[in-house]
Image (tube, rainbow, N blue to C red):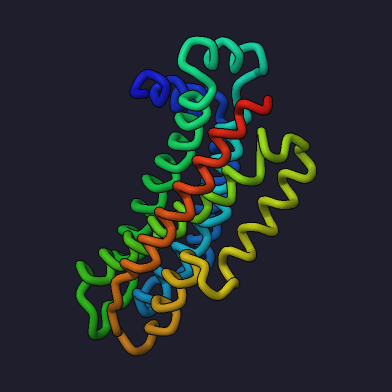
Length: 215
């Protein structure tokens, strides 16, 4: 699996397809977060955007190999392992970018009544929950479940939106406490949301990997 992850990461970096989602995310955070605003509210804004970014990154990683190269990788390592490695590459890259964003936003925001360490930890947990939720969306809205590019993109955008607004969604459960605590400085670590995101992501990724047999 380590070799597959290195291979997928190298493909992603060389293709430069990562530029679109991550640069847009950087612009989104840079424009939307102002230095000196309450840290928890700023973190809520920052981590919420990781849902579509993670879904987009997973979609890119699952489609970056030409069909011939994908067939060779599947023959050498197995379809399921190859598919899983691509998903993990998208998720891991998003988590890294999200962690950097959380640290940066925590550093420039106002810490009225809350310590930077507590705020940063809540932000990292929420970022992980959002990235995992986005992973589930990305895994379910691209090949092999939805091979059409048009429908894949449409369902990805709709799924990301629903993940952020639907009651009970791990992403919404992680973001809402940050937004509502923007002016109360009440830290509440989103452990239940993170656990839910792990379950949802594992189920979605498992289904997507099993579905590779249909290709």
